[in-house]
Amino acid sequence: LVLDATPSKAPGFIHIGAHKNVFVRDGAGPLFLVGHNVTSYQSGAVGMAETFDKMAAGGENFTRMWMYSGSMGLEWGQPVGTYRLGEAWRLDHMLDLANARGIAILLCLDTHQDYRDAFVQNPYNVLRSGPLAKPLDFFTNAAAMKLYRRRLRYLVARWSCAPNLVAWEFVNEIEGWDGFDKNKETVAAWHSTMADTLHGLDPYHHPVTTSCWTTEGHPTLWHAPG
Image 1: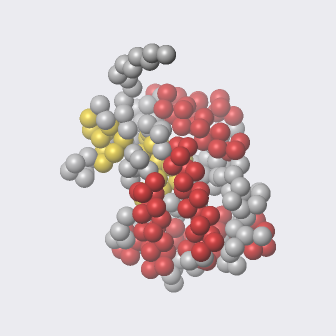
Image 2 (image 1 turned 135 degrees about the horizontal axis):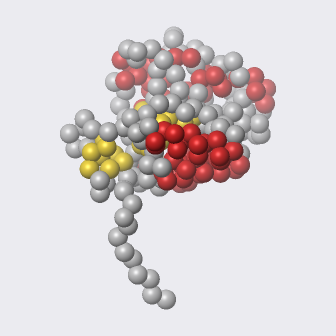
């Protein structure tokens, strides 16, 4: 069996440039991202394809997508530690649709609502045989951290190869997480710990971030290593 390999004409991976002030795409140079939030998977492939078509026609090349209980979240509605493969396929398909239209994705892995208003339904809750008595325990409970590291390993194994993946974002609007205000140092330490995990797993070295709903953010969090 003889295999012939030829250079791809497709652009390469996205990463932060050497001067730390611009994104760069391998084989294509600086990449200036213009877009808006499309935070949930619209019904069916047609709806998402139409959305991406409109974005591309308007000159947009970037959006941010959530993985959460309502869409593309792996852990929900079943025992914690088991994954919804149908939602994983949705994420596969969303990344493919976006890539075909030149749209880069910031992938958000969780949102605070699932650990606040919806926590009673959360598979990490002890009421659903999970390890957490309250949402804030997510950042310190050893069993929860082991489960989360396992999820990160799955994420990297399945999606880090997507050429239009810009970065991993841990949480949408972390301030909304129940207990955040009085435990910022604990939450920041968790972010650094899990950022180290992601950096160690991801062979393509995607940037790691999180998000705040305040314009100024939080120095304890933004200055955290990782």
